[in-house]
Length: 347
Ligand code: 13P
Ligand code: SF4
Image (cartoon, rainbow, N blue to C red):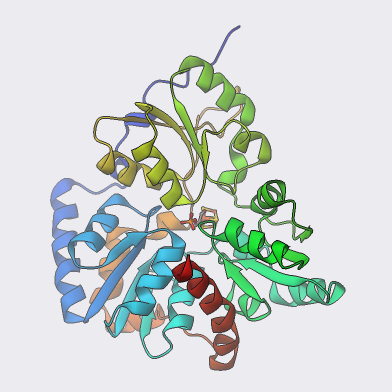
């Protein structure tokens, strides 16, 4: 069998190479951001998919790097009056909903999410009205308006357990917006679920055929996959889970090599936490394509060092990138979000 050679190169490329700034400029920007965070009395919370330098800055300055669930919890519990969220917009909105008394800013408000974009609140409301008997469970990757229409918000760290619990109570579920995650949870729990048909533009691109080919080249490798991926990709995985679950599996499984089906931003922490292990990107491309993996969220990538420095530097620009939430809608959205955090805390 003639297998494409996916094994060279890309798995060793440091993430910041994509960013056209030299080391001196990068260090100067990092120093400036450290200073500006102090001046602005702000804490930096970063998702695992953003630029590695931003993740390090969050770690170094008393902020936090995590999955979307822990970002929400940390933002709510931290006492800084100003929160800077490096991630995508729903993460900033979640921080604001949970802490209406704090100010929440992002490097840029343009950082969207395809799941959020693909679930407009008015169309979603009509969908809910078609199924009034169902418990509405929405993924955190949604707008504040969609969260306000829900009974439960979940992230990929707790979705399975929450649906299991609702199913055990005999509740039928309306799930939105990620169809792949919804299908995965349905397969695992057998719960009665109707699914909205959204997808993540990054994870939907992973290809089972390419992954099998790569696995044949590295039969000793463990396969780690985020559940926003298609079912055929999930079926090949040794471990399936949220970004933090993938990190845990990489630390705990015995393999020395891993093929990883999630955004390449996670490779920064994977390599930091496992210096002796090798991580290879799962392929997103077919045999004829020129790139083997395009798994980097275009919106997460907007969180650049230079963009954050400019936003923190300039008062007007900072204000323009503040997350504002309608107080009444925010109050309604806080309920299902708090339910999720309480459920998680009680586990
Ligand atoms: P996690 O909740 O696993 O961090 O994932 C968030 C996300 O946007 C995945 O694409
Ligand atoms: Fe949304 Fe996918 Fe980007 Fe995560 S990786 S923020 S789900 S588009």
